Image (cartoon, rainbow, N blue to C red; front, side, top):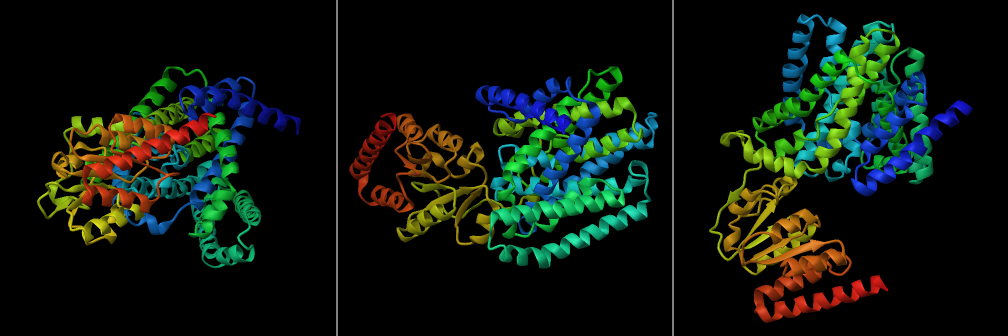
Length: 550
C-alpha cells in the first residue's frame, strides 16, 4: 500500500508542478506530463511503471471506444479505409520486408512496422478536444482512421498471442470474438434498458461503466490475453448514441487521471539511448511524423477530398499508437523483443507525443504552408462536395458558416431577393441543403475560398463561427464590404471593432434575432442606420467592460 501511495504521489506532485509551468508559458499539456515522467523515472521502478502504463492505456482505450458513434463515421470510412490500406501496404508491409531482409528477424520487424502504421486514438481524444468538432470533415476522417487502426491493433495483439501470452492463435481469436459478440449484445439490448433503469443518473452510469470494464478486464486476465482487448470491447458495449454521452461525461475526470498516468509513465520509461536505440527511434520518428502524414494526405486526395482536408486529417495521425506500446511491453516482459528496439519504440513514442501536441497547435499554419508549397492536389474529376456557383456574384453577401444561425440569415436573404454565397467546410451542409444556389466547400482560412466567393465585389461578409482566427482572417481581407464577425468575450469584441469590424456579435449580448435586425438595417436602411447600431454596440461593450473592471 505504501508503495502505491508513493508512486501516485510522485506522479501527481511532479505532474502538477510541470503542468502549471507549461500551461502558463506554452499552453501545452502532454509535454508537461512526459517531462514530469522523465524526472520521476529516477525514483520509480521499471516494473511498477510498466504495470502503471498498461492500466492507464486500458482505461483511456475504454473511454475512446465508448465515444464511438458509427453513424457519424460512415461519411469518412471510405477515405479512411483507403489511407489505412496505403499505410499498411506502403509502410507496414514495405518496411517489414526491408527490415526482415536487413536481419531484424520476423518479430522485431513486426514491432517496428506496427509503430510506423498505427496512430494514437488516445492523443486524438486529448489534443484540444479535436473530436468535439467531429462535424468537420477532417475530424470525421481522423476519427474513422483511429477506429480502423485500433481494430487492426486488437487483431494484431490477438495474432501475436502465442508469443506475448503463450496461448494459441485460434484460442485468442475465439476469446476476442466471444468478447466482441458479448459487447454487441450489451450495446444492443442491455445498455438502453440500464440507462432508463438508472433514471439517467450519472453516478449509476459511472458505476455501471466501471463494473463492465472490470468484468471485461477480468475475462481478459482469466483467459490469458491483454487487458486492453477487454477494455476496448467494454467501451464498445457502451458506445450506443445518445446513451453513451452520460457515461463519457461522468468519466471525464477519471479519463484525465489515467491519461496523466499514461503520459507520465511513458516519459519515465525513457532511458539514455545507445546508438542502436537512437537509430531505431529516429527511423520511426521520421516515418511517423513526415512520411505517414504525406502518404495519408495523398491517399485522401486521390479519394476525392480537398488538399486542405487531406493535410489537416494527416496532421492528426503523426504519432505512434498506445497499442504499439502494449505490444512492445508484453514482448519485453517475455523477452520476445530486442532491448534496443523496445527502447527505440518508447523513445519514438515519447517524441511523437510531444511533436504532435505542437503540430496540433499550429496545424492551421502547417496546413496552409503544405497547401501552398507542395505540388499535390486533388484530381479534378474526383473532387467530393464540389463548390457550386450558379449566379454572377457582384454586390452580394458572403455568409461564413451555415448552422442554425446562418440558415436563418440565409432564409431572410432569400426573402429579400439578395444574392448570397455560403462558405462552409462542414459536409453536412451540402448533404442536407440542396437549395443553396451558391456555395463554396472550403475553409474560411483558405484564400482560394474567398477568391471563389469574389470577396472584393461583396457588399457584406457575415461570419457566424465564434473562432477568433476566422474573425481575424475576415478582418484582414482587403475589401470595402461590411464585415460582421462573432466573438465570445467583450474585450475581444472591442478589439475587433478597432481592427475594422463593422459589427461584432457577442454571445452574451446578441441573439440571432438581434443579428437579423442588423442585417435588415444594413439591407434596407442604409449607412446611417448601420452606424447608429454600431455606436449602440460600442456603448454597450464599454458598459460591460467597465462593470467587469469594477
